Image 1 (cartoon, rainbow, N blue to C red):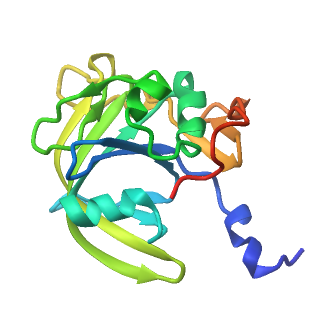
Image 2 (image 1 turned 90 degrees about the vertical axis):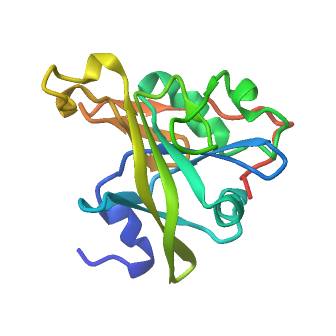
Length: 192
């Protein structure tokens, strides 16, 4: 059955939801969820993230030229979803029940509760329709101890990413459907 091309997104497999953390010039931390991302080069290690140019996250990345990608597990389901509904809170980590940890190579903090944290420096960007494809060069990767094999390999089969379906609906790699709690009525809808 043919579908409208506007619905292309819904005909593709879900991608893992990530949390991007940044820090602005006033030392305020920012966290936002994204699901359009991928590794695009091995040497040098580059990751591409598709961002709306109107987002606060994009503006901070352009200003500070760095960001951290946190890969949450299903235990962070509500934090992932609710992070999209914060409106530049003074302490977004505290609001989400997350812990900011100093990164190894950049200023943007890692998220302690994430199973993987990938530190990136801004490398390039490309306009792609209504989004900007931001390319970050990986400068450090921190993986939870129980996910690293003795030969320094990440045991990818043990990673538990959250696939984003739509809205507050997610899926695990095992095919378990999850639904995040909806934000309180006093929160703003959508992060810019």
